[in-house]
Amino acid sequence: MLNLKIDHCVIHVSDWGRSNHFYAAVMGAEIVPRQKGFAYKFGDFLLNCHGPGVVAKAVARVPVAPGGSDLCFEWPGPLEGAVAHLEERHIPIELGPVATRGAKGEATSVYFRDPDGSLLEFMSYVKS
Image (cartoon, rainbow, N blue to C red; front, side):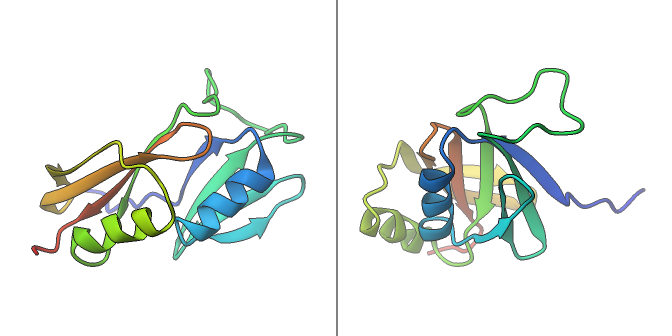
């Protein structure tokens, strides 16, 4: 069996300033300037961005549109911390906390949206 690991994914944003602020302030990303845009770095994972002024060299057959992504991020502690984090930043919670299952097994998740409407999820494997 191969031991592959995802290196990066791609989202499409409609407004660099608004998205950069959200992904830094809410998601804790390091904003990485690119030739004509930005990427968001989370440890050893990169979230590449297509957006205004960026024409990618290679794209999916049907490129993702702004708001068309669904991404899950593992929260490092109990999910109550994620809920408090979102509430402090006035980010509406769309669903949760709810029982879910991720790559590591049983978990609890909370769902919310980025400025373009992409669905984001904080998932915790830590029991409260």
